[in-house]
Length: 283
Image (cartoon, rainbow, N blue to C red; front, side):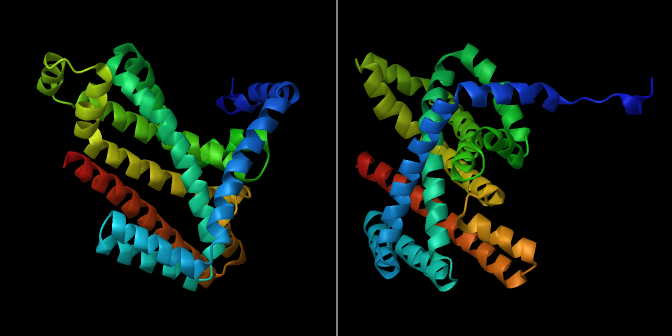
């Protein structure tokens, strides 16, 4: 047998399954789409309802009050660039997409990571699965999402959620496994409840590693949202795609720099807010 005649075609096996899902679970998928679109539309509506200058001033004031003046200056500069580059609406759409995806990713990954740190069998099952998920190229996640939910923002968010879960889950498990045993024993000896041990001992000790996980989740989610511009997700990813297809270097460069500005804004503000909250809780 000629090796060239041997072909592996998983699509021939998966296509009937996808057709069955679309035929029998169409109502469930439609409900998921409506829920995601409602949440995303609400966040986008709030971000775009406020005038751009007022939004920039509000974010800068909140950053200065909750974090420090450096964060306020960063917010002013990054959002100002998004406005001056002509991508204010696209930037707000991207921030809304990333916000929804990161919140859901953290809501799924954090409790699973805590459980995996306590149940070693669960960790043994999740570890190879997470390794595979982090090895798969990001655009591969868009294929099944588009096949089930068609084009648009819904498959983009779902693919972003799946892509953002592994780093947060893995670093959550690592963070809680790294909590010093003597601190846990001290808490138990003082009669602290499991809830108090989790909130007052484990969580503060794990916070630095958790912040790294959140950082990775935000950056990977932003990268996926940019790629999702290829499937009609809108936002800055659509502007990058438009610049590439039209061979307009200026458009692509401005959109790319706006993505960098959004990434810096989300990363620094989320990290600074959580670190500031941790310092206030410690005092």
